[in-house]
Image (cartoon, one colour):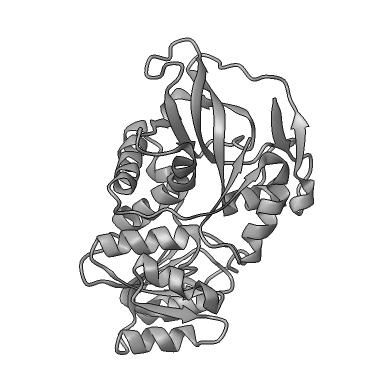
Length: 321
């Protein structure tokens, strides 16, 4: 089979398509023919070495496809089942072996592309807005990068819980996409003062929460934008890691700072399936809109990483065998 491999860390150029032996499921595992794999910033972190992985390594933490074989002891899945997964590396490939308890069913109403585009980011957005910082009607929140795949999902899920959203985008041409997702106010951070806009929008009070996946470039502004007892949810670092923070800074408003990882919230199979069912159900009902920016072949994994890191994508990037 063909798979994207990296033998060293570095830029997108370290990603190459190679021919590998056909995998086989061990006991408790399932072999899946991959139909679509999602491209996420965590893949870039693995590639760059920011999140070290054993080499050689096949990136890709989410995907969707069809069960091709099951290992001994697997009873939940049968050949031909449509499934999706998140948090399992090796998705940039024609086939992948996944532990049976890390799979979720894909409803007949969804395509493999929709499932692969929605799962990891959809689970993350749901967990952040429902568990990490449970939002309530009337809460005012700031979401960074509101036109991206993750940002649009966060806006929609925050709005579904009754919260009001102000968001940032990196370019003016992305503003309509963020508004369409449900943001009340959209800030072009390349030309506007984000902190001043947040203070104006909240009548000087600050926001209840900030959902920040950008990291170093936005951290100080995010912290300053919070209301008293507000929470900064730092879930990514697209612009680089945040330098060490003096906890005394939080005393300015009895603030909360958290750096959540999705995988701690979906470690139990029951939690994984419940959250996935909620995400897929919202898509099927038309309550959650998934925007796929571009679909590329596996051979163009490096192109996908360059596009994602450029900050100019809107919606989700997918790789297909």
